[in-house]
Image (cartoon, rainbow, N blue to C red; front, side, top):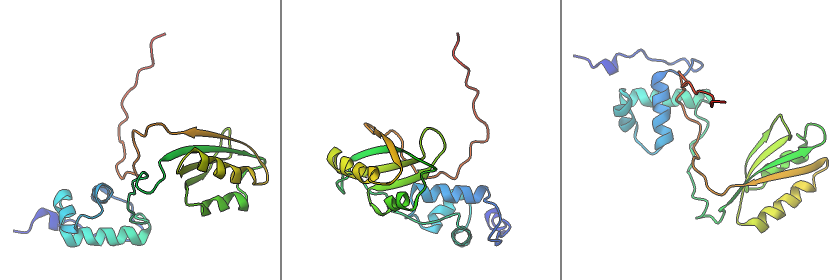
Length: 176
């Protein structure tokens, strides 16, 4: 008798939405991308070839954009982490502002709404290196101010998760 997990309809359309099996596969890859397709298949209820086909499709569609190594910041001499809010005249998304991506210390660069134009996630060796980076930011035309938030302790640092919260818990407001 053929196993139930082998009779699942083949999903070969590159543009189709991510389904529950895809989400479970993505969750396993996020937890440990070095697992074999057979190991992932055992955990999600699919055969290794089915997992391989789905991963191939998710790579082709851009759902999986890359496979990366998670590096320990202390091991590479970058223990000092800060989020830098940049206030600039205009939108702040200038060609020179975008050149900040060229510094390996810049891990994220976001154009945002609110009380600043750009938020950067910057990791350096120490406060002195951060100060030298900020001097580069202040040298950009239109930069009026920065606000830096130095991280003391990181309680959660994870990549995008495939799971979606279907039902949010009711959170009562505090009594007045």
